[in-house]
Amino acid sequence: MANNARYDVLCIGSATVDRFFTITQPLQSVEIGDKILAKSLEIYTGGGATNSAVALAKLGLKVKVLTKLGNDHEAGFIFDELKRNHVTAICHCLAKGKTDVSAIISSLQGKDRIIYNYKDASRKVGLCSCKKAGFDVEWIYLASLVGKSFQAVQHFVLQAKRKKIKLLFNPSLYLAQRGKAFLQPLLSVTDILILNKKEAQTLLNRSVSQQQLLKELHHLGPKTVVITDGEKKVYAWHEGKMHTLLPKKTKVVQTTGAGDAFSSSLLAGISKGYSFADALHLGYINAASVIKYVGTKNGLLTEAQAMKAMKSKRSRSVR
View 1: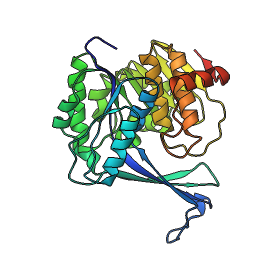
View 2: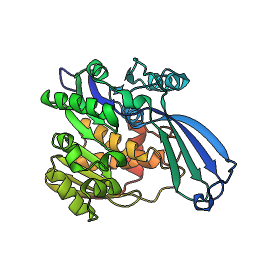
View 3: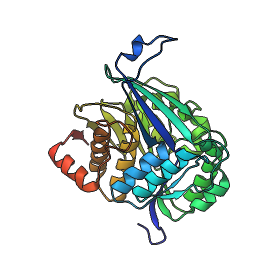
């Protein structure tokens, strides 16, 4: 950590309460008007900001999180989760409205899922909240925000870059849909850009190979670009070289949160001085652990647990 940085990472994005409904029939068989009896219901915290923050903290980094919560019971649920995981919350100014909520419906008969997101409080991150977050960090991990929140945070991030704070940007599909011109101010100052294949193709409005996507995204400004594709090969461009990683097959219970686990763990590896190949592998190992559980945080590993898994379960990594 730099001498003037009190924290390793500031995570910015949404915080949600996730309700996981599991049904027995295939999702494709559900028709409009059906009344479905769920097999199980589990409730956990989620959202890009808290998922990444907890993952980074468990891997040994000092982390704080900037998000917005409503004045309701769900906010307390999230505060308690962050406190248990030693994450500093920069979100005590509660919004007039409700904490974001997600409903995730998945089937025992397949890997598909449907996610319904309700966004309220996370739309109300203002410049005042950003200023309270401060610039005493090495990295900013920027997940997705929408509306005025995105505008305020973009202004804050550009200020942070002038203070030599590094940026990992992990936009979601709804930000990618705004296009490269809309995101260019951030892309031009991004140190690490991480998207999945669909997000990358949407952002560039091009259905081309991942190798071509990497090159075109790199030309927009990000120094390092990583493109994931579910259980298929990961492609990355880092310091003038192409990297790939082929994950091993892993039993999947629920995929929600895997992307956040991968991105934040890769950042943890880089922050701790791992080689880029090992940082990629750390991301894979933590994501592979998360998908074995319901909930975005239940499978997250400590650094010791991840090191043990990396030694016993090497994926094929090519530089």
